[in-house]
Length: 127
Length: 325
Image 1 (spheres, one colour):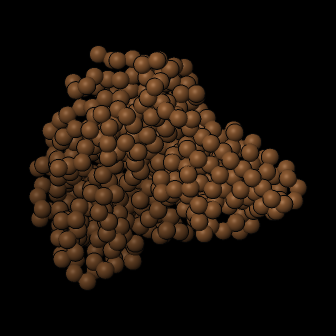
Image 2 (cartoon, each protein chain N blue to C red):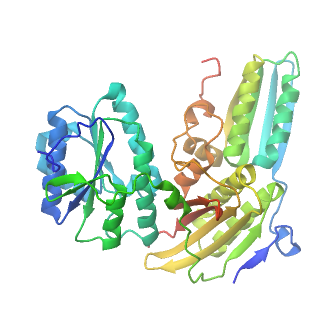
Image 3 (spheres, rainbow over the protein chains, first blue to last red):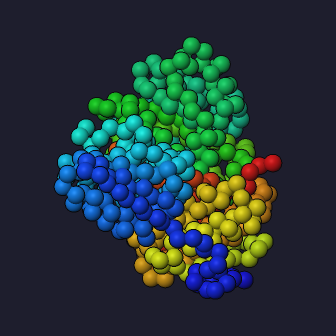
């Protein structure tokens, strides 16, 4: 009865579509902006974390802005990565905050009980 | 007098099934239980369907203002969301060992068979969740006229106390927390899936692909309105399996049609072992990093079945109900 697939079968891989996570980051002297587009899941977290670490390595940086407006999917692994990014920044004395999010991301953040921590008007980690 | 004819002075969590034969007995028993709480200045939360809440409000009169009411149809639609509601009530009002009461009726005639199975698990899990909450007395009404004997037998197994016709006493069939056996109960095989069962083996690099495939399956199966939910559920279940499971990992998707309409089922299996029976029922707090995956799934799906044993490995099956026309 079962129709069995390896996800990489030719018959199914054409359904899989576009690359899932795009990261763009730029910084001036004091602020870095990291914009995520697509989907942030476990597979993408390492690349995101590396981007955050690179930004933190810029010595003059005072803030990191995480722009999630073009992120159409996030799950609990993605949320963990965002929380870890805020934590690493905080430990480096840098304020990292989410500056915008798509409705889909906002929904998951609310369900995960993180609206106060990651929401638009969330306090920074010094609280 | 409360229906039990005694107060819960034991200083332990008192989980009591109240077996009622008709509406009049229901109202008498629950109203007396509530009035005892009000008289003793004990906070009480009553979680019932809206019709019963309305009837109780008029029976109680002014006392109703001292009672918190909540709609079981909404909180308990997915029974895994009920324990967090009790937890938050206990955390808010039970400081310093203050005595608390609750009435909760998660099981009513007309629940789907698998909702009844998971409600029994829920009732068993309450004994685990509040084992260390002395002074909390939870009364669970059971409609003996409307419920099947097997369901009522379940109540005897999951409640240390049984109250029947005003007489309360220990259940002679209480099986203790008994959770190992519940968690090890195998799930039934897919029943006459209309489009067959689609099966994918996956590992960490396939997470996005299987998510997308599952969302497309949902659309094809007529669950397009829930495709985003399915994507999230599959994402969480497969990721959980990749992070915590072991051995071969399989995702299966199928639909079933029964008396209650169509259901889309999404299931992830691996050879790992889950040991915390309350997983998915802890409300995440503050900045805590982990532990949100199955919580999120429970907020999105209509019913979640978690099974795990050394012999069978771990299976997590999410049900998505078609919207009622």
